[in-house]
Image (cartoon, rainbow, N blue to C red):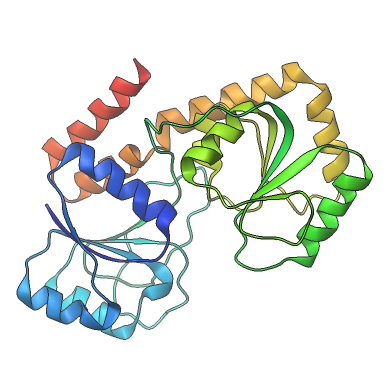
Length: 272
């Protein structure tokens, strides 16, 4: 399977690529945006992965001209395409349509969980804040100040933020390892929620919650309630929200039953 990609979002692209590598012989080609037509004229591709914000008129034209089966992920504000968008079955996490009116085979994918990620062991902690925001946020700083004043121990990882609790950037394996041993994983976006859930971490994702401190303290003090929530979210993700589930939906729509069945087998192997 030959795949053309135009993307900068490592989270979803890496997840899709990792899963694809388990179910198909994959050759991935990632040219510059202005070299898309050159790549398409020189090679035949089976699938096109494109991040939503990189959708440009030239890419829309390429999808039309070459009838590319396309997976779009992330947010896109471009509204001028003359196609009909086909959505993969509704997910628990929010799916924002990336392009309106596609008539080619175009699908959207949101965040999902990776299977079989080896992770390091980390010491236990109370609260780990996973910051995926692309820029400094005054609101996030205010919420962290409230945590500090309440004397709830926490540390921040991910994208840099100006606070003494910031530890540094982390890889996906570190995120999973930290989530496994933290009582609460406080996420600023949906990006890592499926992976944290599959690691049996407790996810709190409402960073704008005006009662954040009280709610975090409640779950820190109620192990039984926290364990119940962890179990439910883990089951939800494992039953429907891994990248193999995403690829299964896509392969079914692309009439590739053999690859779709391999996705189900990967999930079954993990569950066993």
